[in-house]
Length: 295
Image 1 (cartoon, rainbow, N blue to C red):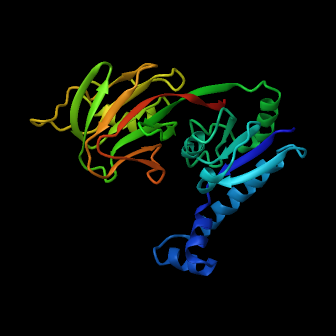
Image 2: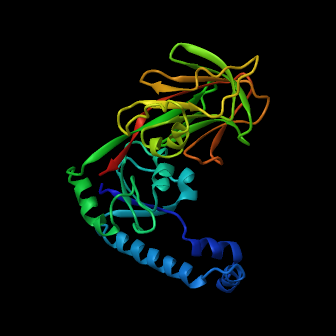
Image 3: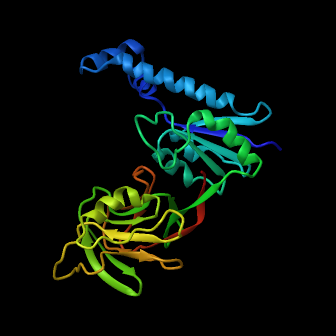
């Protein structure tokens, strides 16, 4: 069977405005009342539509195609022979990564002047050549490390950038953290476990504020790093185990001491999360899955 090209994208600002306000006139009135230029929003929408059409036109005629938005990812069934084309920013690649099982991902940047991309590094005009390279097995593939969060009841979550563990409101959370043979009871605003892909984002901001920044991992070396946010010392809690590297098969273990509000989510998507109850144990480690990024 011939491959299927699955195009993943986000709705444009224009599409979001229409969905919210119902008509073009109502959307334009909303923007004008706030001193914004409606014409620019529409121009960006039309430019995206033109780019999207060109990408789909580059798919060989005999291939099957599918097109989905980020909101549909959790309901879409990816097939083993799919070639995934992400048209958007880096965050969209992270959103789709946890739903895949090794399918190659081509990241296309529709607006290189507006936003650079590490994961969407190709211009849309290269789509045809890249698809041909993937099918001919001559495309360069980078296997980027992913993180796995596993609860003691079997629930599992994957992330390409980082896993957050803490309170849903980011207020103080209490837990016992175990890493590299040591355990410590802590109170903090949460724990980040980052991959090498996430090392240039949230984790980098936290690390830069440390007196001794942790050496963050590379995207494909299999290691993870953990960083405790704003650990608070008290008679019952300590702050001596707040960062470090996790080398497979090492895992970070967290035992929750929150009555309610404990959450685990990946890549900043708080709506797609696991609930963490008092006494539950969570293990975060390197996942067996990787992102197969076409470079």
